[in-house]
Length: 158
Image 1 (cartoon, rainbow, N blue to C red):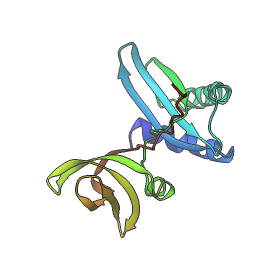
Image 2 (cartoon, rainbow, N blue to C red):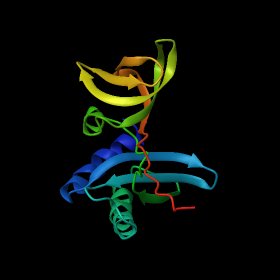
Image 3 (cartoon, helix red, strand yellow):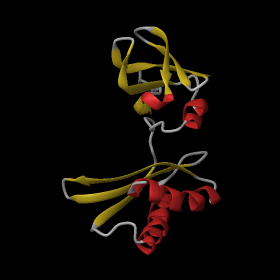
């Protein structure tokens, strides 16, 4: 298990207990040093004040764990509209929504897919790809996936 997995396992019970969802944890070097980033969501969305409150709670939890021995910045945010899809339950929750998916292996002569999530067939994600129609992608082959929801923009009359 890596640091991200250890921290996820530590933080998830606390977050779930508060009626929220831990969408993702990232720990990576960036331009100004290491960043530990939590993406949290809940029904109805996750606001700025909640990010501040969770930053304090999670900061204390991570410091007490001793999992990270280097200096880092902590960020807590909502996953946003283009939220990452990590687990089978994520794909099931967003059935009928478009997603952008990158695979480890070449499938149907491509590694990048863009289409509507249709569901699962055994351990294969069924996607209505914009280019190739129905594609079955083994969950184990997905490197990254994120939602690509339609954005409703109201225009003012010109």
